[in-house]
Each structure stands twice: as structure tokens, then as C-alpha cells.
Image (tube, rainbow, N blue to C red):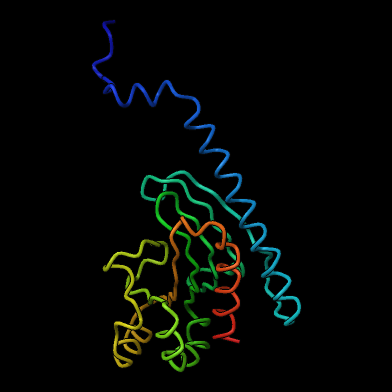
Length: 197
């Protein structure tokens, strides 16, 4: 057999031979998990104080390939039964952002839609976005997935709440805000939970 026809560019070969890149990435991912563990401790304590009972404890998950990039998420609450979803997802997406997302569908959407309709003004003043895509597992903030609430009229906001299969309300912060990320994610969790309780 002759040599492979698959070739690496000079830049690819340099990366391929550099163990420090992967070791550093792994170290960062461990620190992201620790950061989300801090958030989990705060939000589970907050839920306990307010006597909010969820069926499952929070869960931290990590992956390597959300649009080709690593991610770490904390879901709490994390209720998923067929089309019945109730999540608050704290996410760190490599190279992109930290985000906090309230996600509701089915009976959870039905029972909370009016509360979220009434929250238009506070959400508009708080730098939050609303999901416009009917795929609940798309998390980027491009124009075909989220609209900034303060860019929408109240009527347009209400129409999105009514017509989308999933309600998604989200905020994001740059990765450079690492030092305040745990606090921002915890505060966003409290804010989002406060909108529906």
C-alpha cells in the first residue's frame, strides 16, 4: 500500500504535534465544569429555600461537537417527557459565549405563557432574547434562532410566544466575562425562575 492520499497542511501538522493544545483545552473544560458546579450549588439551594420541588436534580453534561466546538451545560430543572420540556440551561460554548435559557413546551408552556406575556417589559429592559426557531436544541444567537426582545413590539413578542412550539427566553455573556460568569448565570437562573413562579 502506498502512502495515504490524505494530507495535513503545515498548520494542521503543527497542531497535531502539539500536546499542550489538548492538555490546555482539557484543563479549561475541567474549570468550566467547576464553575457550573458552583452555579448548581447556588440554584439548588435557592430552589430549596423557595420550596420548589423538581423531579430530577441538576445535571452537568459536556460534549465536543456543538457546531464543531466543545460545550458544557447545566440543566436545572431538567424535565423532559416526550414534548413536555421544562429546563433552565446554563451553557458555556467554547469560543462563543455563556448563556442562560428558560425552555418550556407542552403543558409547561401552557401554564406559564401568560406570566411570560406579562413579563414583556421587564424582559425587554433586561437584555434578553426570545427563541423563534421550532428546534429546541439550537442554542446559537443568530437572527434565525433568537430575536432581542427589546427590538420587538409587544405584539410581535406575544405572537412568538403563541406560535412557537417551544418558548425559549435567553441571555448571553462573552467568555471574557469569566470572572463574573458564575454570578451572572446564578442571577439569571433566579430571574428566569422568578418570571414563572
